[in-house]
Length: 148
Image 1 (cartoon, rainbow, N blue to C red):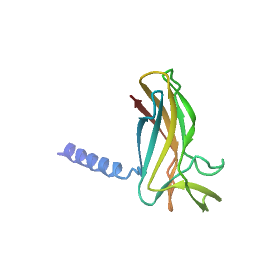
Image 2 (image 1 turned 45 degrees about the vertical axis):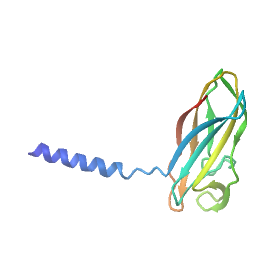
Image 3 (image 1 turned 135 degrees about the vertical axis):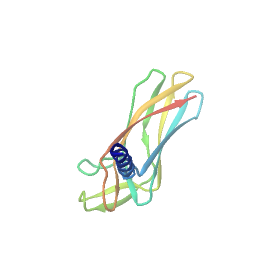
Image 4 (image 1 turned 90 degrees about the horizontal axis):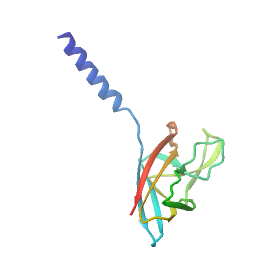
């Protein structure tokens, strides 16, 4: 009987702790061929209401800006830098600076030159997400985008 109580308490505690994990940003990745040897990668962040992700163009010393790193591969080369849409801007007391950020949804784009018929583009995205009340620690997520 004592074992049953301990098991039930452990299960209840596990559900309570896991339900408190905040994940206000969901990332998705796709690729679209734009020519016989060209393609564009789309890295989309869906951001929950009340939260924002910072742009790539922030000065050092403030929040962690969005950044993308791509694993070199013989099947493709990067064509330019990661593009982003126009961002919002505001002064944030926490960083004592004007910051550029995105709310709701943002799609970053990276053009590539293909050296093979197919490619698997691997990399990571690092970002920081904040609300008006709190910031979460920066995250680095791995991704893999097939280009067919």
